[in-house]
Length: 478
Ligand code: AMP
Image 1 (spheres, rainbow, N blue to C red):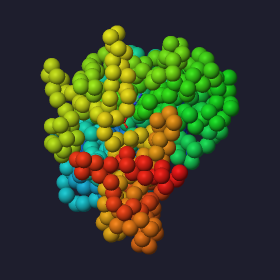
Image 2: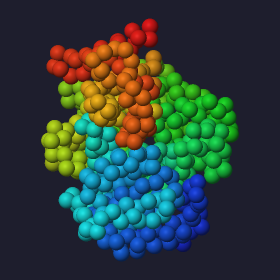
Image 3: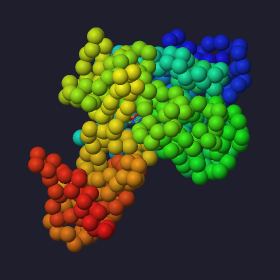
Image 4: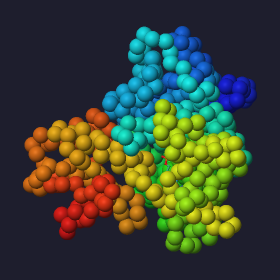
């Protein structure tokens, strides 16, 4: 059995209906069970007024019911809005408010929660498949609206160019509120495979990850490179211990050449795919099949070439993307849509904010950001959003965060600074700063230290000067 995305229904009903579809910490569903549960979910949703173009916020963490709800939304053509339980209530509430959502689906309880008695809101943009909220510079998350046509393009691309085999078994490590996880969701559904969902505790233990991979014969590894790096702690993370593995599919951050080399040694026959792209262009836009020549150099790993139906090019040093997989726009953010989106030959385009280069034969490279967006352990975040959360601490002082990087350029942790007018330590009212921040922003955005500074240094254009803050941090730790 598999799920036909364009028909919005299950198909090939007689083919292996008892094969596993979803494997979660709280239970497993075969394909026929997934079909039955998703149909029942749709009945319940319809009774609450949910239908085409009604956004459904799904909250939870890797429950089988989360996957059922995602499938149900595809059947109803209701855009899903995944919010992992790692997000604090404050963040969830901002998302519900931005959407005007009237119900929330709580996957942990496998139940809908009505929020207000009004009618179900209907999105202005029609035929959206999902809305993914990412970190926003204003301190509010921004909703990336992705149309069904864009997802169809992703599915077609995976079928044509990823070579994942029949009924692949996906390792789903990424939370559903990060779009890399949609490789697993759409790959499983459209290829009639299975999804093995790793909850946070399991994901933190490389031995457990490998044991689950072996038990369920995982064939397709999908993650950020950071997560694969962690597995190298396990000496038995290799091809002879995990013979079913047939693809490494990376996305979300630069693939370090040394990591790719180690994987090649440990898994000599497993192809490594490096894909690149912002959430705003439906999971990924470029693909590189890592070859020996990419491992034999010490410079940055190329990101490959644009997917078939899209164009990727550099304009004034910035990577730009055009094609049907570019978002329909940020929800209710005409300002951002005007500055980041454009039309090219009648197709939607997006300025990524990534520094790029392209060789004469078309190979693309990404050289980091032009702004304060960073990746920390695979999570995308805006330093300006952390600044805004720091500034909400008692006393409402000016505040800023800096990213401390390792030698290879990857961000290791964040440090926050608050302006106190004096340089003799944090005021007593900030003693509980970490808990206060954790109620506002996700755990991965939390600085590991908070320091007082007399005045926040500013640059000539009166923006916080993070380079000077970094120098200050280094002088304090010299
Ligand atoms: P996200 O929207 O969370 O997928 O993050 C997108 C950003 O992550 C991109 O704009 C890049 O800055 C970075 N990124 C994603 N994939 C890659 C890659 N394969 N190589 C280098 N940077 C990447």
